[in-house]
Structures are given as structure tokens and as C-alpha cells.
Length: 333
Image 1 (cartoon, one colour):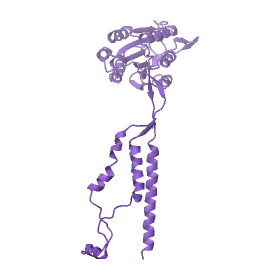
Image 2 (cartoon, one colour; image 1 turned 60 degrees about the vertical axis):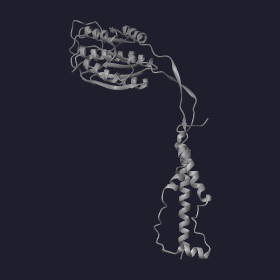
Image 3 (cartoon, helix red, strand yellow; image 1 turned 90 degrees about the vertical axis):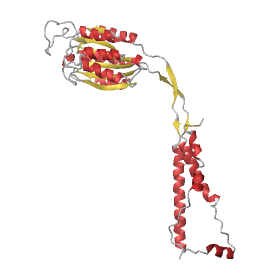
Image 4 (cartoon, helix red, strand yellow; image 1 turned 135 degrees about the vertical axis):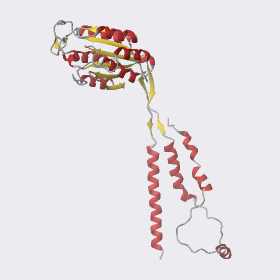
């Protein structure tokens, strides 16, 4: 059934008549002989001096054009079919460490050695795919924290940005405090009961301008729940690795645990791919996806049709009047 989004536009229908009644008549710019006793001459000749009213036939086209413009202004729409839309669940920001140590190949994926970042991509990728109804965003951090993908329902784009993340793209340090501060800035405008940050790192704080404890307190004040994940194998904990760090011992678990507890979240330790998979299940259990959905209708706008018809008739009327003037000039000696 046809609907009008702005039906009040039809109240403008009498506007041309009101303007004609209130505004003074336009003055002709053509040269004319002014005769002071013109009324008397017309009386003697038997001609009437009353004002000539326009012919209704000549007004038909302008009236049709005005009606078409009113219909276009009222925005006619044709309602579409009802389509289910997911209700917004949670606003989840994923903060992933991309410092140099995340390239250390002490993890395993499908029986093959894998870097820490590669395993995080696989596990968080599956987590992203399952969060239908949630807004997801991505922060990549190292020496600096950058918002790679803002909060969005487009999970495919968020996963693409995660898959394309490169080691060292944000520097080689670990700015945990700045990362939390950026996440709070992005989440504080969202509903208070839906703000979630999942922070994944394999190192200790060593590059923030904001201390992690201060950032965590700010997150708690803004009701941002933080789940921290420490990643890295315990093997080789006593010998320095290829990147100048000690695998398994550089991770500041006490700090990550403190951040999670202060904000009402939880800390997880992942030393292999099986534990990471269990963490994914735990996150789904702690922050379940909103399953309810609502229906919405996408209306098809129809205003271009009356607007286009009005433009065509206006061009026809302009061409007709131009033709009349040309013919009158040709007849006039």
C-alpha cells in the first residue's frame, strides 16, 4: 500500500493562489505608450476595462506540475517485505598485540609450528564469525595503539583486517595502557551494559604514556569489562629467544590479571592452541550473543517519478511559450 513519509507537504497546495492574491502584479519591461485617458477611450468604444482573468485551460499544465511537485515533496514510498534484523548485543573491541615477539613460532596449528600471531588470527577469526548480533571492532597495538576497524556489524571486514595484520606495523614495544585508553574512548558512547574489550598480548607493558593501572581504573569507571589473554608457550622459559626476549617469562601475568579483576572481566593464559580454543568457548559463555531479532521494513522511495514528470512537463511548457513568442515576433512587422 502506498504511503507518504511527509504528508504535511500537501498543506502547501494553496500557496500559489495565496501568493497571487498577496503579491503585486509584475511590471512589464516592454516599452509602451502611456495614455492618460485610456479608460475613457475604452468606454466610448464599448470595451470593458475589467481585468482579464487567465483562461483555465492555460493554467492546467502549471496546476498539474504543482501537484506533481507536492507529491514528490510528500515522499511517496512503497513498503517492502518485513526482514529480520539482529538486535544489538554487545560492543566488543578486540585488541591484538602485533609487536615483534608475536612472530615467535612456539605455537602449533594443525600439527605445524605456528607463530603466536598466526594462531591468534585463526582463533579470533572463528570468534568473530560467531558473534552475529554484536558490534565488533579491532585495535592493533605495539608501541602505539591504532583503531584498525571501528565498531561495526560487518564481521567479515573485521576479520579481513585481522588476517592482514602484520608484525611490527604498530612498533615493537607493548603499550597496554594506551590500548586500554583508546578502547575506553571508543566504547564510552555505547550502552553501559555492552562494553567489552578482549586484549591479547604476549609481553609486559613497556611503552605507554598512560600507566596500565590508571587506564584500567578509567575502564572500570566507564563500565568497560576487559578480558585479558596472555599468549605464549612455557617452553624455553629460561633461555632468551631469537627476538631478545625470554619466551613465557616476559609476560606480565600479574598486570593482566589485575586489569581483568579491576574491570569485572577475567584473565586467561594460553600456552597452546587447545587452551586458546577453550578460551574462545569461555568468552562465548561469559558474553553470550544476543539471539533475539526484530523485524524492519525497507521502503522503496517513489518520489523520483513525480519529480521527473514535473521536470519534463516544465520543459514542455517552457518550450511551448518560447515557440509562441518566436511566432509572435515573426508576425509582428
